[in-house]
Structure formats: C-alpha cells, structure tokens
Length: 350
Image (cartoon, one colour):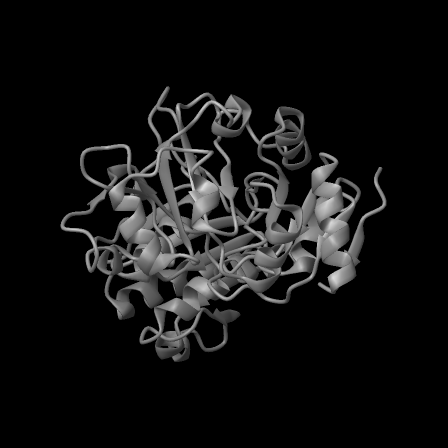
C-alpha cells in the first residue's frame, strides 16, 4: 500500500506532482471534465501502472494531455483540421485522435496507430503540465467501470493506497469526460460526446459524423477506438434503469416499479428533472437539474451515481434527455451506466 497524500494545489504541491510524474509515478489531478490519473505518456511502464491501479483493460486507449499546441508535434501528425479546432476549442474539453508518431508507446494507444490528445483548460492541470514538461497519459481517476470522479474525494474513495498524490482542485466544471473526435477518418467523427457538442463543432467544420456506437453497446469482437465505449461503464453498484417516453407515462411507470420494489423491502432512488419531481411525491427522488439547463444534469450525473453507492441504493430509475447538444453526452453516459437497460413507458414495455 502506498501512502496517498491529498493536497491543495499550491506551488509546492504542483512541483511535487511534477517530480513524481518525472519519476514514473502516478498523480491524481483535476481537469475541467473529470479528475485524471496521470503518468508519463512516454514511459511504457508508467502507462501500464495506470491500467494496474484502475483495473482497466489493456485494450482501452489512454488520452495524452499537454499544456500547449506545439507540444503535440513530437507526438502525432497534426493536420490542418486539428489546427482549426485548436484555435477555437483548446484549451478545453476536446480530445482529437490523430496518427501517432513512434515516440508514443503502444501501451498508451492500446496497440492502435493513432493517439488521442487534448489540452485541458483547468488551471491546476495546466500548471502541473507546465511544471513537469511531459506529455501526461490520463484516463479518469476511478476504478474501471465505476462513475468517473468529479471531486478529489471520489479519487481518494477509489484509489487510496494506489498512488502517492492527489491534487484537490475542487468540483469539476463540465462533469463529463471530453468529446473524442476522430480526425483520422475522411469525415471527422465523434466517438465519445462531451462538452464540445456536435453543434459547436459544426461552427468550425463543414461536416461531423456521430459514430453509431455512441448510443449502443460494442459488438462482440469490436475494438474500443475511444475510452468510454465499453458496454457497461460509469456504472453504480445498484441496478440503474432508464425510462423513456412522455413525462406522465415515465412518472407512472417509475412509480409502479418503485412501489413494487418498496413492497419487497428494497430501497429505490429516482433521478428526475426539477420540472417533474412533483409527480414523484412520497417517493425518494433526487434532482438532476432543470430540462432548460441540460449542462447541469451532465455536471451532476456522476456525483449522483456515486452518492447512490454511498447510500447503498440497490435500484435506481432515471428520466432521460433528448440526445442533442450536451444531451447526447448525458445519454451516452447514462446508457452505459445502465448497461443499456431501459423501459419505453409509451409502449408499456415493462
């Protein structure tokens, strides 16, 4: 067991983080999306230690973080499309997949000849990257498959004893992982939706394709081209069910299932939008924000799922959002957290 320090991001603790990374060790750090588990992206053994700490499958590629655009040139072949996107969205929650150069170990890319790269905007992440002067491979700092961490406490809950340092930068602003955009295909393709939405990308690009795997499970033998594509991911311990349909039908369906479960002595928690919570009076519901502010639902989702684990809730039912704008990213995470377990309340499929 390693003695894990949880430190506020002072100049001294950021220098300590840089020294640990330079020595091939792991550091938990905040980004604007979720907390990352960082290691030297040019050190194969350091990269493998990420997989070991998380219990992460080795065929799931990592994202490489840098502080400035010019630091990408040694790592990958940067094309004109990437340059245009960086001018608008970087630093920020956009990851680009580009052809990799030999310096990037295959351990980081899960054997792929492309590498996922991004420039985070969080001031602590940027300060750490500048201090260590290394590209840092960093997936989310959680046990693989669990909801991603949006606070330093979440990282400590999952990884205490597995890394020497966690920098506490407060709650993450976006709350969902970055948008992953494949720039190696003929048409830029979103492999994982995030804070940079398809609509935003179309202000810069003539065309953007959305991979059909975003709202469906991977097929048998299908390779994960992006982090977060696995069948069940971001999942609470309890069983989560999505319920789609007209609000009154959704509420009626959830109420019936909840009352039946409670009659059998089970605890149930309902994830509902503010506009609908009155329909769940007498039942335990938590707010996932307003339908008019879907970015709040995105920011809160992982924290809500982790709270359900903290309270040992065995059953959860969640309302859904339209899969557009940030709602696409929300539904991508919700689908995988639920293992694609859903009820169509309008069809009465219960």
